[in-house]
Image 1 (cartoon, each protein chain N blue to C red):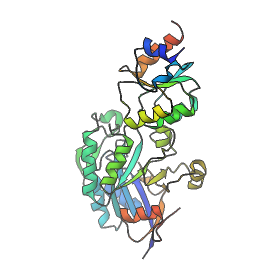
Image 2 (spheres, helix red, strand yellow):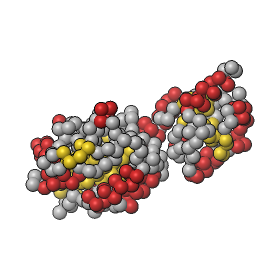
Image 3 (cartoon, helix red, strand yellow):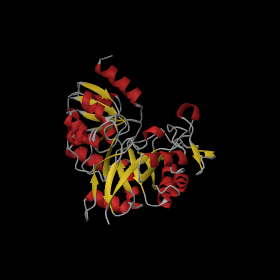
Length: 243
Length: 112
């Protein structure tokens, strides 16, 4: 049976250097519960190391967590990658780490804290997660799709790290599944401005607890999975994106 | 100034649309944000960038730029070069940085 699922699929944790340290797995899940979010996407910059912890923390609370990552392409475009399984996002992470030069300086960019489900520190991630990979946009999208993931262009309305700021416009040949609009722009306004051929979604891009769920998208789907969301994007079998 | 003179004087390598080296260049613009280039570059300018994505050709065409100089020895892929050839958009490369080549081009265009 089809049902309405409230999704915020772009949430950072304390692993992102720019993510608040309060963004621990338990806090994120509790806040999502308060905001009646059914499904969370955990998308830290160029890493997925906190996904298992959030998934564990969410289990007891009956919040669904989709493993994800916000990848920075060579062009400095941010792309959300979302998967059904942790193993897929870790495969992506392996390739990302191999192509992500530099080492983090936590005094300059912020701490990159890998934690367990209780929020206990496991280690500090050494990669320069704020940096860009050396992989071109199209290659990243191909890689995400080869791992059966969803590829969504992040915050296309933003002045930095968006496909439009970096590349001027959305290439015709771009194979992303959807375009994300930041909370700064309404979907109605975004439709008018971009006249997109691809589906539009709105997620919070939360770096602070208070931001979780400030922006969300409803999917009308049978169950929470990448395949179902894909069908919603394509308007197949009654599935749809409800904005 | 003709693009050909700039190519020779700055020791650039031409990758495509060689026939269009006699294009006039009236100025230059250096930026890696294509949205910025679309907003601020002008007709017959040469564009200095490290971006190699296919979209650079469309931006150059839209703004009627005289050509693109890719810095840091970066190599556009074959799709970008093919498109540039079709669109008559010369792409040149240099191993130098955007800072160095912009400085050299600025002096050349100012006749110093």
